[in-house]
Amino acid sequence: MEREANSIIKLKTVYVTKLLQKINFQFRHPENTKSIIGIMVNCNLYYDKRFNGVGKQVGTMALSNSQKGDVFYSQVAQLDDNDYRQTLERVIYPTIVKRNLSQWGKQFTWFKTNIPIQHAMMDCYYEDTISIQYKNDFGELIETLPYEVILYIQYELK
Amino acid sequence: MSHRSKIIKEAVEVIVSAANQTFKESFEVDKHAGKILGILLISDYDELLYYRGTQRIKINEMEIFPEGYESKLLMQGLNVSVNERMIKLGEDILPGNRKVEIDYTDTNHASAPFTPYKVKLYVYSEVTA
Image (cartoon, rainbow over the protein chains, first blue to last red):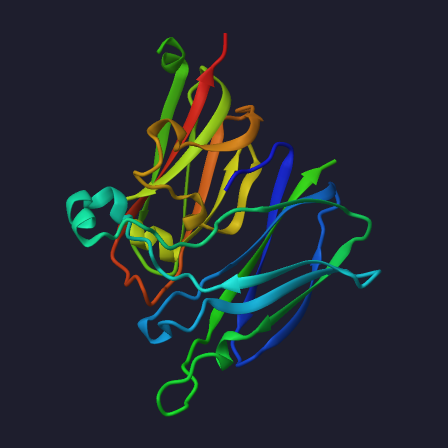
């Protein structure tokens, strides 16, 4: 999660409370910045064994220029599959026996880019998709709500 | 190893004694510190820090990480080489007024029930001639 030189990080938390919720919001750029150099979308919805084998996609986030309307960034928010066990380092002997040397995880890294800021704001759109993916044996939707999606933006300062 | 002796390691501890609250701590870096090299965030209950923690970190009134920045993005485990664990700030930050502040916010999470825990922020700075 490196921080670049001469930069500032801002974030926006999106609260998803309804099934298949679609959220439009605007993100105001700080005045003392000249370009976006990093974008990251993170979600605080964690893996549950009820979700087993049904994918990791939670929703999609799209960012667009509010004046031109073109989407310059789109990202799938992913389920955190809770593989924070660090088995490789904690229990070497049982790990070898069980042949469990691989780790699942989430990518906690910035999408590096360089988007000049020409307008004061950008439009953001988040669409929840996880709520339709998970049904139990009776066809009922599994409750995933509420959860939060956090949009991180790293700016280069003027 | 001579360069190592020039690195000052200091820490401030945040005691999280109640759920869903913000705890503020601050300290001043050593007067010999010429520039801040990086920071490190650890806890005695890693799971709680991972699931429940967000924080704002300021050095010399400069917001390094904004309010709401998730603690899990700053964590690292034993599988990271000891010489690479420090979170570099991308630039040399001058200590200025030498004040380092952390506002740590604990938020309820189903995967990690609350128990009192400690969060420790290490600050690495370098002595300049």
